[in-house]
Image (cartoon, rainbow, N blue to C red; front, side, top):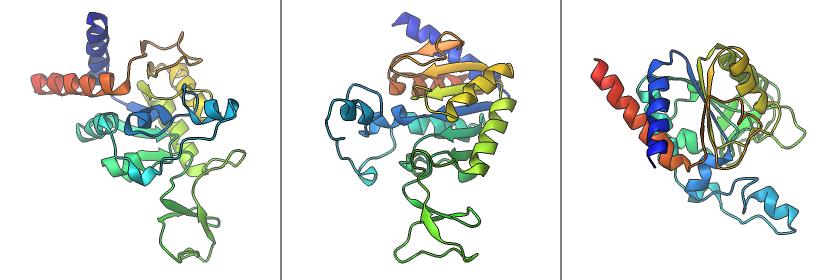
Length: 232
């Protein structure tokens, strides 16, 4: 337990020192809200590999958890410059993340995307045509489909500019999103990984947490808040 406390203190100190902090989230952050991940013991792909169907759980039935709220606190403290997410569950926006600080690389189940101008709008009954005349389709990116160009470009740009890159709940195996922490490392950023399960960058990161996100991130952000308060 003492080792965890020391790592949390170090994590908070690095967030305090950071001038350009970027957060990257995967399905693991939403498991504590009750949604399945992909590669965990009861994950979607794990169950499929065993011949089982995924456990149904509508996104609308779950709420943002302590991990989501901790990221919102980073935003409100003025520390987070950008949030890159692989999730489509809408929990980041529901938790209070500003849309201009968020790239949803795989889309959002609550949004439609215009095939012509790429504008995203909230779903609404009967809404099929964009104001530009283009056809509106689900914004969720299916396997094999290209990621949204603007979100992808913004994510790589922020990854290259950051000095602290925090991975939260991702196994870092899905391309091209998994290239972003590598870009951050190559640009000289510190890399922190919070994930239950190994990742390809475990030996390259500067700080590693295998504990639950809810045990790490809220405590680290609370310690950060105290550091900021004491520095004023």
